[in-house]
Image 1 (spheres, each protein chain N blue to C red):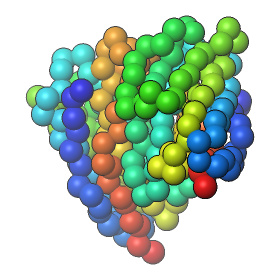
Image 2 (cartoon, rainbow over the protein chains, first blue to last red):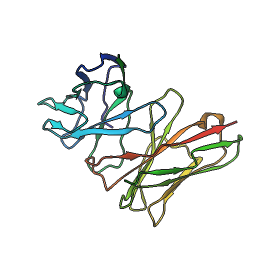
Image 3 (spheres, rainbow over the protein chains, first blue to last red):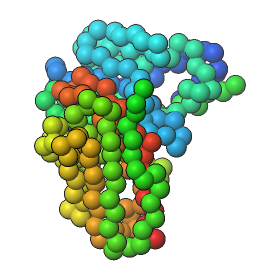
Length: 110
Length: 114
């Protein structure tokens, strides 16, 4: 299984942008890059995913490096409700499993 | 909108007992995934089903079994429970997959083994 590497924790001030990095140097050409987040005592929640091009949705933006060996989840204005563990996961074509690594615990300071 | 429903929300069992966790996917979703999350740990993939057939297997103990039924709901059966099985068990569903599908997670079943 292709692996992802993320920092254990990050801090951000409220209302400021947050850039959460992820390394996936062994990614294959057909692997999708997914981001999920898990708020305390809740199930993981989908944030965004993409293959090669940068992606935007109402929650966040996903910037994918040209060689696809890394990506960055961008929260444009962090709020206290964005405090969560963020997971970068690879979705492999032809498989039905998404392996969670050790995500990044985001702390948002008021 | 309908979400993934898991039952029960909480379950308390004694060692060596059996437990059955149920998962009802979002309507029209045909793929179900099971995850185990121990205290302070990250979710661990256990097993998945697509169109009622087992698809992929992760770190699922031999004491556990699962299946997906004709109405696409799934059950995780756990036998000879051990203290270490105490965890939050999540089910997720998607419409097909191939790496390009969003997973929708339920609220989980908290299993406590005493």
